[in-house]
Length: 241
Image (cartoon, rainbow, N blue to C red; front, side):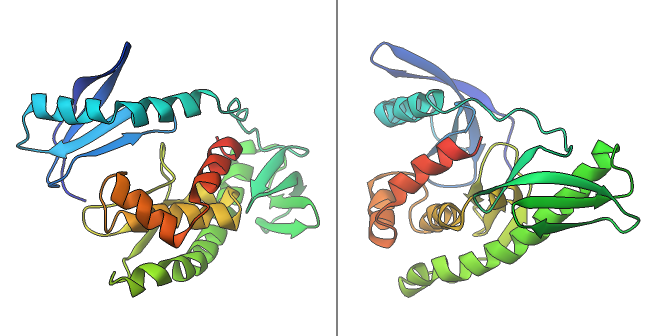
C-alpha cells in the first residue's frame, strides 16, 4: 500500500449538518470517501489537491455521507464483549453456535451439531480459549474466503480484470479493502458472516478495481454483477457489529 502522511481534519457540511472527517493524503489520483463502521468519516485525497477543492468535492457527497452515518446510527447495539466461556453464543458462517469448553492436552476446535466445542488445556484460561478459537476461525476464513473469491471474481475477470492477490488478516474498522497496489484485503472476522455476505464484501472490493470511489460507476457495476447487493449490505451491517 502507498505510504500516507499524517492525517489532517476537514469539516463536511450538508444543509445544517456538520461532520469532521479525517483527511489522509495518498499517492492515488482520485478522491475516496469512507464512512467507517463506527460512523467516522475518512477522506483519501491526492497529495497535491488543494484543501478547498477537497472540501467542495466532499460536501457534494454530503447526502450519501449522512445517509451512511444515519444507517450506522440505526444499527442494533454492539454485541457484548466475548468472555470465551461455555454457554456463550458465537457466529460462524452466519450460524449461531453455543460455545462448549472442554479440557484437553490437545487444543483444537470442532463442530458438534449446534455446539462449537473448544478443547483447551485449561477451561478457566479464557485467553487460551480465545487463542484456540481464533486459530480455528483463521483457518476457516482462509478456506472459505479463497473458495468464494474464485467464484465472485469470475464476472470481473470476464470484464478484463487480472485476478488480484487475496490477503486475509485482522482489520479493526473495515470488512475489506482494495489497496492501491491492487490487492483485495478481507477481515478475518468476516468468517462470522454467511457466505452470501462474504460474497458481497468481495464483490464490493473487486468493483474498486474499476472505480476507486463509491460513485455512480461503482454502483452500476455492482448492480450488473450482484443485483441484490444493497440488501446484502444492509444485512451485513445489521447482523455483524
